[in-house]
Image (tube, rainbow, N blue to C red; front, side, top):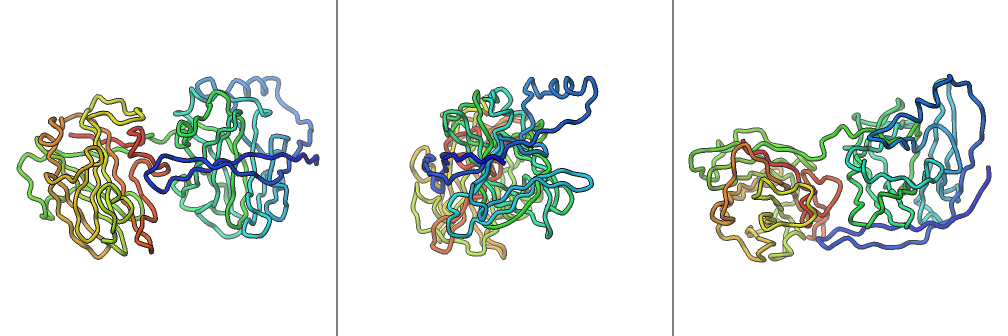
Length: 418
């Protein structure tokens, strides 16, 4: 094995608050590059041609790691922090990864794959049609969480990081059998980090805690999942009075850690009901535009069915409102920077947390109406306070893995009025 020492720059996103993302530059430890052991194997006459011809929309650089070491693979040099070993059993050849970041001298621990001989990859035209798929299995006890963050880096040094989420797992858990983890490529925050998708350099992985896993392959595959979540909004003809349980004898849509919501509309109003799972409800000491920093609900939606769903900034027809769910609930309009007295709501505590009903007079507030057989951008998020009374996390319906829906409607799901 030939060892080369390099320094890499790690750029992490800081985004707890509603502020724009900021970047930090960290100096990494030395890394070990693992050189390939070359060999020969028998292939059919046309095997190589067929392998090269396979592509997704013309993009053929699909194999990031495939059962072999090469000088495209590197890891943190300190072997007490992380070890990569190529192993083989009766059926498979695979990469065994063991790590322990929780010790002195292991400030940054990770590995990387500069696939396709470190060539620059033009992935701009396939960013919405690809997913990164890892085939992995457990060493010993089964688990669901992989404490890793994934990053694509371009040749200018820009990086786009995304943490692992168990929703990426295509099974109930990772067992001793090969299991697939699939991450849509479009979830990585490329635009927020001025990433050059025309010149992608490598995949980087930062590890946390301590653990072990085996990797059979890492590759790019067609993204079969919907890019946007959808919810149906049914029409009610009669005037609806809030506070009646019979109003909501319709299916609720689940999201986050036990939350759910449902929507209805009339010729004048949009009705929203939200069930929040919160062991310590009504904790919010913040006021007005800062109400997100405690127990709160945020709702963003469009009143223009023709608006481009990929837009990165708000139009006049886009709305973002918040409900302070503290001791004295009220509704706030971030666009107008004022409280919304005309939005009616009913708040009630439940055994699981709280239940909120809203009636938003769309025609009165936004001088328009919701149309049948039309679709609108829509997002809902629950802000949950921590032990210090400030927001500890935000759980979103559509934009599960990426913050920023309050800035970019491209992160919203779809509301379908029937």
